[in-house]
Length: 234
Image 1 (spheres, rainbow, N blue to C red):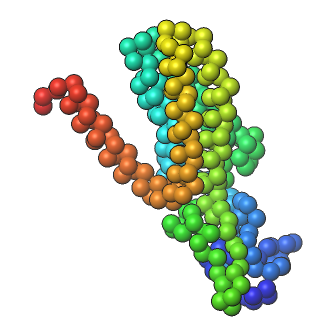
Image 2 (cartoon, helix red, strand yellow):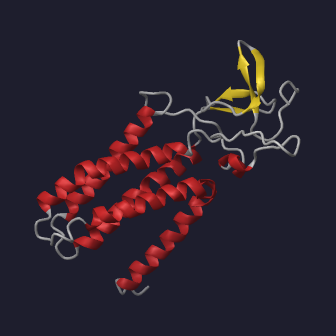
Image 3 (cartoon, helix red, strand yellow):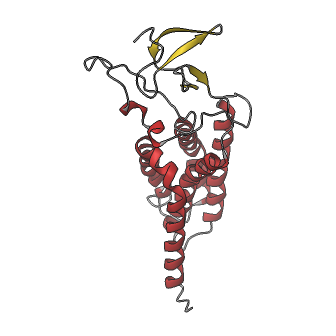
């Protein structure tokens, strides 16, 4: 396997050093993936529009959930709800900017990526080959770099900024609510952030292909519920 012309499996490759292919078949470094010749090459392409839409969808999920729980727990005493909505949007916006700045190329509001070719690109850990049917050649990598990890990094920044800003804000402006009620929207975030993280870690590939249909279905359901609640007769 080490010096064969090609490497087994879908994602195993060999390193290119000084213009020549060297080393054993194995996992490519982060930010690279194996090409058709089974040689690791860097991810230098810009994300497609569909990729940006997917990232936007995943970035909007925590913001929408923040707004929902802020509104849910504010109830009739919603004088502070607007400011909490603005703060939540600020937290997510700043987190998105920081995430872009710390992702390659560092310090720029742009990213370089490897193009998604098929669903298995999201689940490379399931495609480690066994050339001799005994030993497994581990080639698990982020073939969709950075679409998989950038969402997790964004969620981490969102959580940190929320814990730094929101408790102080809520304590100042939500005096009308009971002590047990004023922090419930923050407690809710401590539940849904782990859920979103697991959802991305396990179902990121499925969400990548399904999110347009999810948006369409949720839009129709939300519209139907709103019209029903508002007693609008068409």
